[in-house]
Length: 93
Image 1: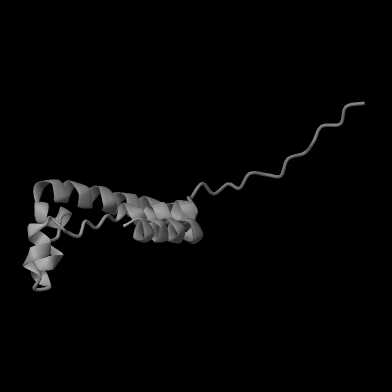
Image 2 (image 1 turned 30 degrees about the horizontal axis):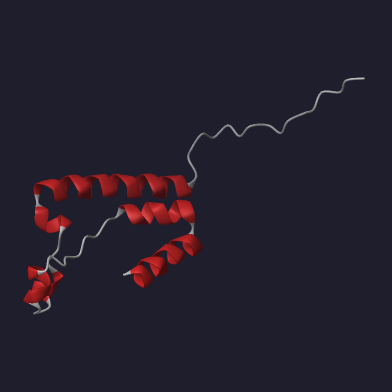
C-alpha cells in the first residue's frame, strides 16, 4: 500500500543566509570596481614598479591588476581550491 512521505516544514523566513549576503556584497563591490576601472584606468592597472622605485617594471608593462571578484570566487570554491589555483599560478609564472 502507498504511504505518503511527510516533508519537514519550510521555514517561514525568506531572508538569505549570511554567506549569500556576503557573496552579493562582494559581487556589488566587484561590479562597481570594474566600472570605475574602465573609466579611471589607474584603478585597473596599478603601476606598482613605479611606486616601488623600479620604473623598468612599468616600462615592461608589469602592473598590478587587483580584482575583488576573487573574494566571491573564494566564497564559492572554498579556500583549498583557491589556494591550489594561486599556487598553480605562481608555479606557472
